[in-house]
Each structure stands twice: as structure tokens, then as C-alpha cells.
Length: 159
Image 1 (spheres, rainbow, N blue to C red):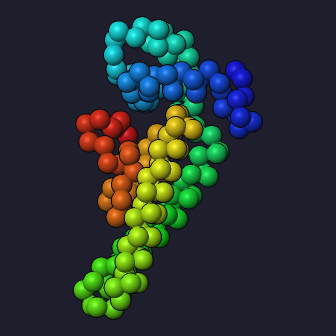
Image 2 (image 1 turned 45 degrees about the horizontal axis):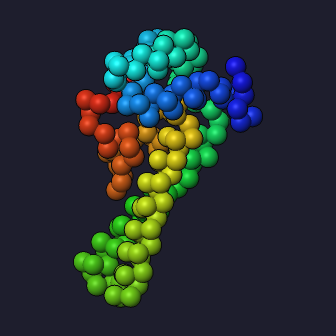
Image 3 (image 1 turned 180 degrees about the horizontal axis):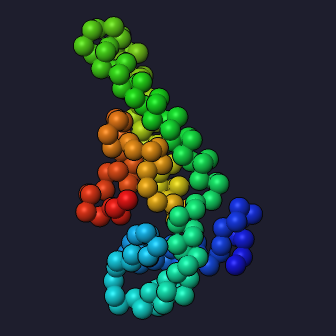
């Protein structure tokens, strides 16, 4: 397999996963099996998935080291967003934040929330083999949810 970016990522596997996602497929690992859902009319993509099954399972179960660039930024970002949200709520209820400071803080919160969301999108675009929550479970403990945690439970792979 070709190392497309110097990080041990396989060109064919990344290409197959991107093509599958773009065609409406969901490709996940269930134990040692590959679970594929999507349009049955795209036999070309299904054939590619079958051909690279073992490598796809390996890529999904062992994401590349570059993923940490995104997950660390997202963990830091979720901490900042939570702290900022708490300050906004405290200022609104106690009158401790002036209007101008509160407005600037709300603007910063909105801008950083958008950045956080865009990082999640970029992570999944750059590393289509990445699965799960980039911050380790934002659904229960955070002010925001990643694309994995925000998805309806029936559409997420079961652990």
C-alpha cells in the first residue's frame, strides 16, 4: 500500500473510505467484521470495500497518529467553551459581567464554537478512518457534542 502522507496511511484505503462516505455509505467495524450500510446500487464501491476489507478494518481500529492533532485541540476547545459558557451564565444571573464584556464573550463563544465544529468536520474529512468521539464522550459532560455523539443512537456503531 502507498503511504500517502508519511504517517502510514494507505492511499487506497483512504480513497475507498472517502468514496464510500461521499456515496452515502456508512462503514464501521463490529468486532472483527466490517459493517457496511448504504446504497446497494453502487456495486463499484461495495467491490472496493470487499477488496480492501482487512486493511479497512485495520485502519478503522488503529487510526493514525495525526488524529491526535485534532483530538487534543478539540479537548482543549471543549474546556474553553465550557468555562466561557459558565462565565456567561454566571454573569447573566449575578450581573457580574458588563454588557460590553458579556457581548464580547458571547461573540468569542460563538466564533470558537464554530471553530470547534469545523475541526470535527475536518478531522473526519482528513481521516475518514477515524470513528467515535474525539474528546472521549462529549454527550454526557460537555456543552457541545461532536458529530458522533450528536448522531441518533440507532445510527452509531455499538461498542
